[in-house]
Image (cartoon, rainbow, N blue to C red):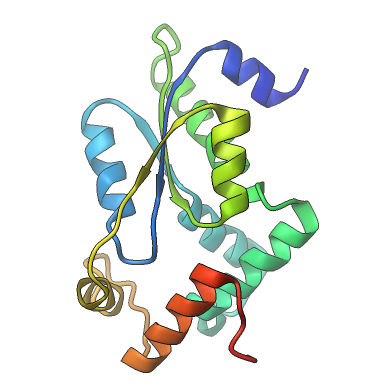
Length: 171
């Protein structure tokens, strides 16, 4: 009996939020919080894991995050961040109110493997969030929380291809 088996026996309401960088996934997660969902961002978990692993702050940009995430997925399985985020969201929901059916939101679902794991093994509802490339580029380079992805428009476009196709630009 795994943690997922126990968690799924609790029959949580589970919403996954997928989409490209800067599309508004965490904004949707924040809206879910207003409806008493425990929201965990897989991207925040990635950044925390990078920090805990001693990755230099200068390597924590979008490209560095992508490389680190792929290394973790190779080591732990392609579903690693979604599974870990689900478990963290479940723990947060349990701490907040163990008497109600858990309501969980997991944002930062990026890869096909993560989507497959989420739908097949967690049986949640998946929302895909998107915005125009111009809006996403503006958001990524001027985030309200102070984090900024320092990149040119050309670098943004290369990252879009790399992240949506898995094809490297020989970095």
